Image (tube, rainbow, N blue to C red; front, side, top):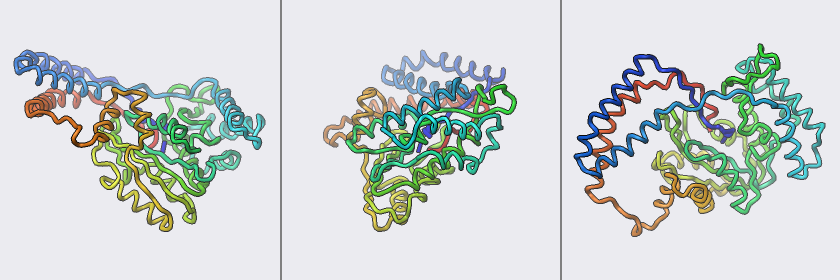
Amino acid sequence: THTHTHTQTRRFVIANSTAGDTVQWLNATILMADLAPKLLMAGPRLWTTVLLVVLAVLQRCTPAAACEGTPPQLQELFVGRCLNWIVEHGDENHNHDDCETLWTLFADVSRSKDPLTVTPGDWQAYLNKTDFSAPPNATLFWSGTGALDTNDVVHRYQTASGRELVTLEGTLGGSLLNQLTWCGSATSPDGWNSTCCPWEGVQQSFWTVASARYAEATQGSWAGLFRAYVRDDGVVRKIWGNDPPSFFEAQELDNIPATNQGDINILIVQNPDVPGERCGSGSVPRLMSAIAKRFPSSVATCTDDPDAIVFLICGADPDSAQCRYLQRELLPTNHRVDLDVGAVVGIALGSFFTGLLTMHACYHHKLGKKSKEYGTF
């Protein structure tokens, strides 16, 4: 559910462009500059629209951040998180020695190894020592990243909802590695790769087994907060039925005990980039059908854009596209402002011309070799 950024963000590494790619990019840029005066003569509405679309497209062609490696002082960070969690939660079942033991078990799996050789089964001793459970009626699954920092919104929603909701990242076992990148190295002196860690192998295997263990511990009512999005490479990730599936679909739903009794609340955050993914349409009915099939005696409800989520999103960035979209969706129909015909024509023409000019540039400005996704939440 989870960059896991589990959170899991998706990062892509941009390879250096070849000389030919650079020439193609420059040629497209020169062509756009040559046509600019003609577009200006077409009227302010058109060229303003074109400019905005050009900027949006060029932003999508901008190289992403480089691959991340293991942070320095990983042991201090790991043990420090463990101790902080124990203090904040008043946990009397764990102490400093337990944190050191967890670190040893974690390092035994990860350090001085090729990260791609680590499998889910390698984490068994670590899983047996830590805790991935939420209190009864408090489990909150989540999935979806993209422009909206879902991980941040989800965890702020835990407080804003007025309920004691706990995500996987809020458990002791999940909090220790939340939003961390790590992997070992068989050649580095300290056994850690500080340059670039793949998602596959050690990280993916951990979040796979952690997600399953978290779901297995579900007791009573539970909730799920989901959002569809578009990955950096243009692939649409729906709420349900993706290939590869999300952690919730692949690891969590089927590991919630089938005998579990309690209400199920599904919360959908709509995304302007993936229209139609909402309660009653898109892939959401298939999600609700899968839930009903597994838990026939439970009552499952679906809610679009809960007020608390909207307030959190707009409070953090009232000018964001996500906030403006949600505000429009929640306004009564008679309060919405429709575009006039001239604006519609201007937007259509602007998008058409801009597509012709920028498609060539984006296509030849290759995204290089992509590092694998950091998860499929």
